[in-house]
Length: 215
Image 1 (cartoon, rainbow, N blue to C red):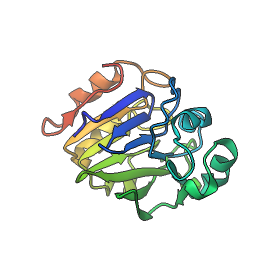
Image 2 (image 1 turned 180 degrees about the vertical axis):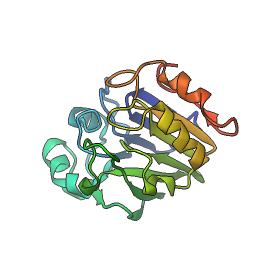
Image 3 (image 1 turned 30 degrees about the vertical axis):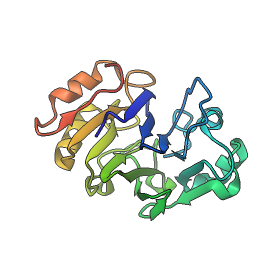
């Protein structure tokens, strides 16, 4: 359920789906592996949108798709090597199937702070892989849209300031009730390396906490 997930830093996530590989907000990618079948982007901030990393992962035309917020489509085309026809722009609330994976676009935004405005239509995603629903939330707070998500595995930010902090994120996850949760977005740009352990202590025992960062 979570062994197929790795995180190199922040919210830069790799999900091995068997015959395909999915990435979410890849940044600071070292080796050029060119192994991505789909790359999901949640928003345009530089700690989530890294064109150089995307080019290192892309296989080439018609082989790697970029899923992104609708408002990012031109920027993605201008700043990466990905062809226009391989960019899949989505709006909040959209549902789409790509390469056999059902995808739901969930609006991601802040409440009471201005870093991720609701009107930007930035996204998190629920992606179904081998019957499991993975929610990669992007940068957000515990919004109405986020609380309505149904998922088996949730990957949520806990670093605070730009997103939920560890206490807010724990309360959100306990209400969401996934089978497992992986905390993200802490220990480097924002938050402490110990935030994952502190977060885990506040999670309902029925929910498995898996630390992929700073474990």
